Image (cartoon, rainbow, N blue to C red; front, side, top):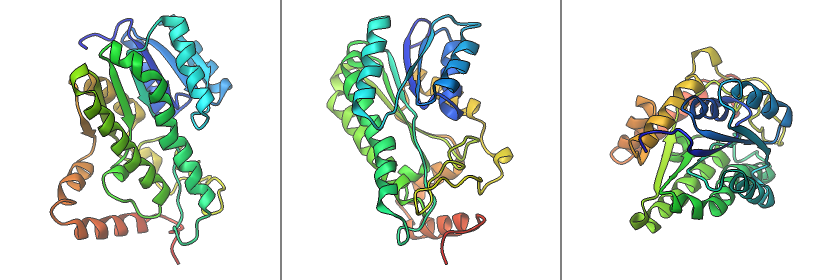
Length: 271
């Protein structure tokens, strides 16, 4: 896929952060972009801004944890443009709590949005992606390659997404479908502020200096590059690449490294 001009692209979680940046990047490359998220106010504003230079941006209010919303997203896109070339499963939420303390409804919520949202959208988009020999993308994290402490639900959802997308890739090896998992590092988004605590409430304040984190525009450019180069897995940080390597060689060392790294956060959630 050398050119993205007139390609039909769906981006979930497109109302902010990585999803918004990815939608804008595809629009700059001439794609027909469908932005999906829950906030109509944010989607309307972003779509209006994109339409100043690309008149083929539309939004569809979507809660990816609801199967009927995902089905509607796909059907509305096909009704509008006739097909789908690229699906970027980006919508996701995080958490910050010890498993010992967490209410299990938090883990259910993480799986509903992160994992089931990916499953639902992929289920209904897949026939069109296969027909177009298109790209299926999952925006993940190093937490999907090695468990991240105090993010049990987040890591579990990302591991599940990896297994799901790898299986989809294998099942369609002969059909030209491209499947990519991209794992950014800590990125400047709202995901930490909206991360769920043990009782299910949103965290509110980020435990990290957001100004020092990876910009979402950087991630968006790598989504484009990864699709062009038909990448399988793309980890955007050296820490992530070393994790993927060392977990096979010295997994205990990786466990301790993540323990100490995450324990440096303010209001460390372990007594």
